[in-house]
Amino acid sequence: MKIGCPTEVKDNENRVGLTPNAAHAYVAAGHEVYIQKGAGMGSAIADDEYIAAGAAILPDAGAVWAASDMIVKVKEPMPEEYDRMREGQIVYTYFHFAADEALTRACMERKIIALAYETVKEDGGLPLLKPMSEVAGRMAALMGAFYLAKPYGGRGILPMGVPGVAPANVLVVGGGAVGTNAAKVAAGYGANVTILDVNVNRLERLAEIMPGNVDPVFSDEVNLKHFLQIADIVVGAVLIPGAVAPKIIRREHLKLMQPGSVLLDVAIDQGGCCETSHPTTHSDPTYVVDGVIHYCVANMPGAYARTATFALNNATIRYGLMLANKGAEKACRENPALKTGLNMYMGAITYKAVADAFNLMGDYKDADAVIA
Image 1 (cartoon, one colour):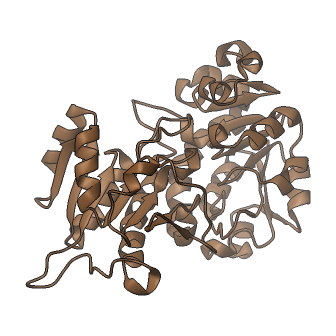
Image 2 (cartoon, rainbow, N blue to C red):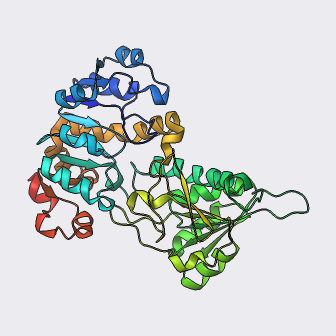
Image 3 (tube, rainbow, N blue to C red):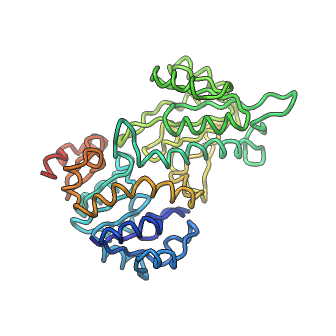
């Protein structure tokens, strides 16, 4: 199979779909790999490293898309890439369809085979989402601390405090991979941290593994309102795989919060878990609603691109090789985890939460039916 990796075009998206190691793995398995010239530069990867791995360098994105049976990316295709997709082409990347109707319809029209990293599910976990959730969660604690500084609009609170002055209060809504990592970093720099979650078993596990300055608390409306009132930093980390994120934090909740507090909505890729959230970019990352700073960057890990790129490829290469070696249909038939990543097939939506998001159940087909 011919595997292509174009340069990412989303604002300040410095990650790249393939590392030289991953390119070498595809070549060693008998496939051809095409890399757009300079695609790895944002992750400090030179073209020569890809050439040494056996890949060919092509001059532009158009050439890569045209030459490839399977495209390996990081972020969803952007509008300028829609016309480059073609019928039957496998696109293996993060899609987050349920938050973007235009992208959903464009991919249906182009009749691609969309394998979405974020919905691949194995052993109850999301192995291709987890590494970026870890990066984004850790980043959220750092960005919250940064924007809490007065010159950036924050309350002027040093998150770890000093002797005689209490540290910041950090509220994490959601105890999954994002929330756990945000809490670890916030606890590490000395903040008082509360994690809200509705899963009692998860709360018990968090109580076992977290340091003493982290309190796992059951999430309900009363507790949410209480902790929002005292929070200096709030991390929204609620996820329903492949579906629109539930709006846990509503507009009226902002009035409970302190002016200059910071809200980081890490669920923004799936529409955000705060009612007042909308996607922002690394170029223009924040805005203010009711005195609360909102940080809603939709590709947070792109800021730490080299770390994120290698972490992502460590997870994606195993499934990518299945697709390349067997083709999408056979690979999905033989691997139930990979089948859960099949969101779209030749014009049909094959992930129910995506069809539900836009009332497109007439275009929905069960994944088993299309790969039979």
